[in-house]
Length: 279
Image (cartoon, rainbow, N blue to C red; front, side, top):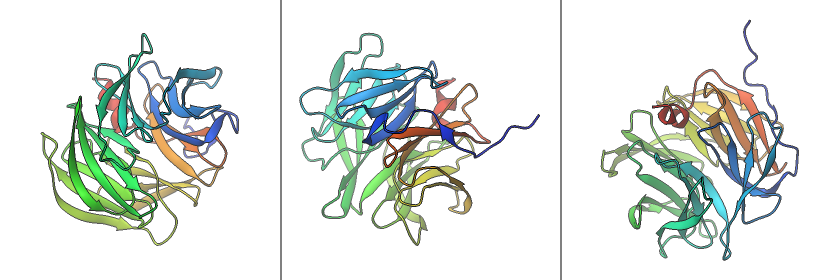
C-alpha cells in the first residue's frame, strides 16, 4: 500500500517551544532535538513518535542556541548566537563545552557539517542586511566570505563538492564549489525567489535542496540545478528550519516560529545527514 506523502501533522503541540524554535536535528536513536523548548536557553528533545518531550540541556551564561548538527563522534554542536560560539554537548553526560569561539562573528546562526566534520556557519547581521560564512573546526574559525547579504540557511551537498547558502532578505540561494579542505570557489546564483523570505535548508540524498520559505508557509524543494520541483504546504506560516529522520530518513521535521512547535511529513527520499549517519 502506498503511503501519503507531503501531508503535515503536528509532532509537538503548538506553543510547546517558544517562537525562537529552530535548528532541528535528529540523533542516532531517532530523537528530534530543537532549541528553545518551553523557554529560551534550552535544547529540547522529542521522541520520534511524539509521545515524550522535555528539556535535554539548559544553556548557561546567556547562551541561546540556533542551528544544531551532529559530529561524527556523536556529540551535538550548537550555534550559540549571543555568545559568538559553537558549543559542543556530550550526549552521555550532557556536559557543555565551547567547540569554537569567534568574537568577529555577528551571530552564528545555522550550521552545516561535512562528512569530514568540517563545520560551516552562516552569520547574518540582521540590522545591516549583510552576512558572512565561516569555516569552523575545533578551536579554530576561518572567514570564507565576508561580503554577503543576510546569510541564513547553509548546507553541504551529498557529493561534498558544493556548499549552499541562502540570504533571507535578498531571497538568493548561492552555490559554491567546495574543496575537501573546506575552501570555497566559483560562487554562482542558483535561484532568486520573487517573494517571501528563507530560513534553514537541508539536502536529500539526491542533492535536492529543501528550503523553508519563511512567511509563505511552505518547503520549496529545489533540484541541484535550481529548478523548483515542488512546494510542500505547512500548517504554520513561519518555518524556521528542517531536518530529516525517522526509521528510513524520509520523515521531515519542520520547526514553526509562529506556532511554536514541530510539524512533520513524509517525503520520497532520505536526507543527506541521515544517510551519512548510517555509514
